[in-house]
Image (cartoon, rainbow, N blue to C red):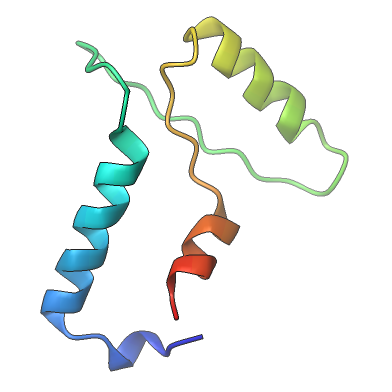
Length: 74
């Protein structure tokens, strides 16, 4: 895994652009977007809550997992 101090400003901008493109693909813009930040111990209900949010938004939601960002830093 790369050290964050090894990235140039351009590399940060490029990575951000790629992540935004990937996360917003096939999503609809909404007038009042809402963010849900979920965290907690294993078994605390994060997955159930995420499923409820997904259902409420008809799938028009962006899910950001820490593991997905860790895997992009190489």
